[in-house]
Each structure stands twice: as structure tokens, then as C-alpha cells.
Image (cartoon, rainbow, N blue to C red):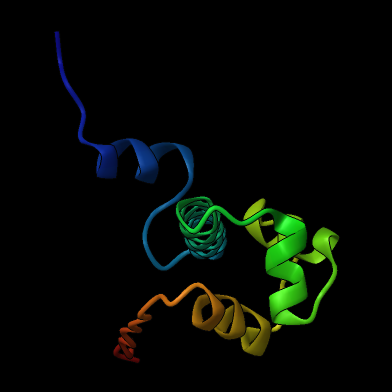
Length: 98
């Protein structure tokens, strides 16, 4: 039985690195992970979506959308959410060679 790496499967079913479809997939995955981390941190702080929304200055629906990656939230809102949750945020920026 032949085994395949995750990279091989992703290349095969989503597209190779650098293609539009693969870039879109990776961006959606990052948003999903971001939403997951926000939800996890909120629950660890024993906050409801409504309570977190009040602390951030947005409605409960906005928090729900961010947690479920159902919207492209403003960057400033996402940073405010992490600030309210007392989370440290790190970003890595990599420039592609052109």
C-alpha cells in the first residue's frame, strides 16, 4: 500500500503551491485557525460571545462570524478581540521571490 504525504494530497486535490486555488485554500485555512483560537481563548476566559462582543464593542453576531470564519473581519477588530482576551499575537511575514 502506497502512502501519501499531506503535501502530496494537497497538491493533488487543491493545487500546487503558488496557484490561485492553493493560495485561496491556505488563506481560508488560516482564517479557520484564527477563528478557532479566538473561540478557544474566549471559552478559557469563561466568556460568552455576547460578553466578548460587549468588551470589544461589537455585536454577538460579529464574534460568531469571526469564530466561524464566516466573514472577513476588520483587522483592527480581530486585534481588539485578542487584546480583550489577553492574548499575545505574533505575525510572520514572508515575501515571495518574484
